[in-house]
Image (cartoon, rainbow, N blue to C red; front, side, top):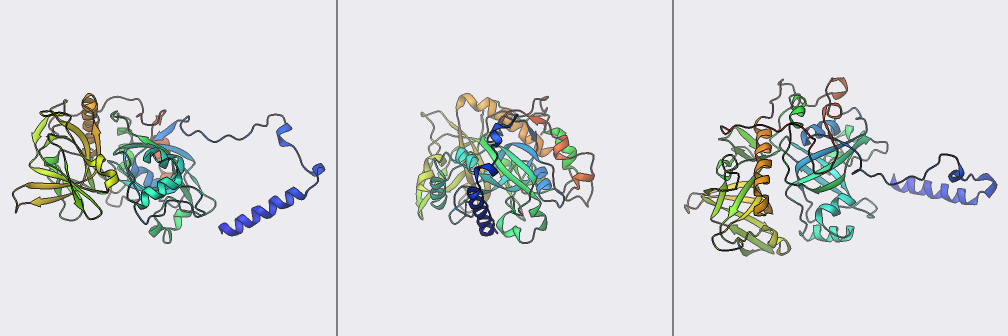
Length: 402
């Protein structure tokens, strides 16, 4: 398909060059003509939504109207060695990216500008090399803008490769991350609650990231994790910790295994300063030599702590050694002491959104037919003016009983 289209365009260009000047028209001389500029997705307003709602838009049979969406406080999964990160012709990045938030997950493609912004790589080639050598690094939390529009050429860029062959609807809709930045530490507002009536129409998914304290995390008997005494299922947990001693890295294959012990389990519900109780266990990470520094926590001085946001993906019980739980850490974002109060407020609101997310109204809930509903993600979501910022609205209230 791509080869035929390229040949067709080349033939058309050759025919155009052969035409005499008398048969050509200078469109720039027309009244009202203006050259086309690259679209500035940061200058536009975007519709605030969540990962699960976005998945319901791109994974349906009917086409969605062209809409620019914004998702805040999301976790983006980076590609690894062996993954293809470029277009078919190899000229630019077009990265398959799984997006996770408190509501669910969706798999999208990310354009080159956004991929370089998040990874801090200089060029597409640098990004590809870092990917193949397991050196890529994304922020723990991101804010993204996603352009969704009907397709005409049949490429299913928002679907994972394994799903393309069996997903007939994938040819109808294009969904691409066009902008992405590291999330600033601002909390979600009540604008997120306006999306809950839509979430009630969809089936629940454990493929999500929730906020919890380390002591709340348990391994699910099926897959993934649970928090709040098993009441909430999830894929991973976002938590605030404080290291009281430096992490230790030991050689592990071609990389390192990083252990962080003597960690404070920060109590986000009662202590706005990031204090808490000692965690009876350890944090463990596997990383490459190039990413070792990012996974290492180091208090600045004796008697002080190093705060960090961590993403927990697994739990191992160390009953035989009496060392408590070992929590697998997939992401670390160090938090300066001056930012701790803002991070605590953000985590409180994110935790409340996850724990109060509505259950499906019907046992038959699944893929919503938004075209026949009074509500839809593109009608109901509030407008976000600035990437990284949440739509202006009332604060989300919480109670300490949570």
